[in-house]
View 1: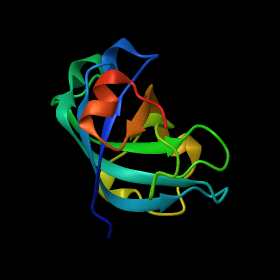
View 2: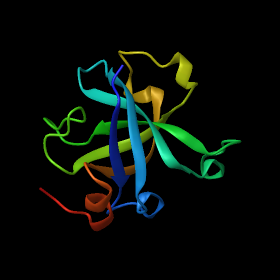
View 3: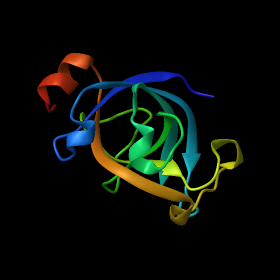
View 4: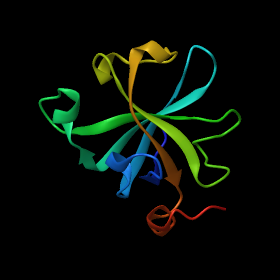
Length: 122
């Protein structure tokens, strides 16, 4: 289990424009070999928009570009898909499949809150 704190924001999604703390708790792998990460976000995402009874605090983030890495982030920001499982989180295990997930946004992972707030690039 890994513990890494990054900061999630988005230049492309109004829903994810505000900075969220993104605590990576587990690295996952797709059946294609591509990496992903299970993470907690704070503040949470409004769950009603996705027919969820409660707000979304757990997400899966996966790099959008080939060769990009989440753990560690080699180049900041790391452009990611933000997703939730179609089932329950406790049943999600590597290797995961893309159709196990529902993409809820596009965003960027930054190393610091300030970088995320100002959308600073390396």
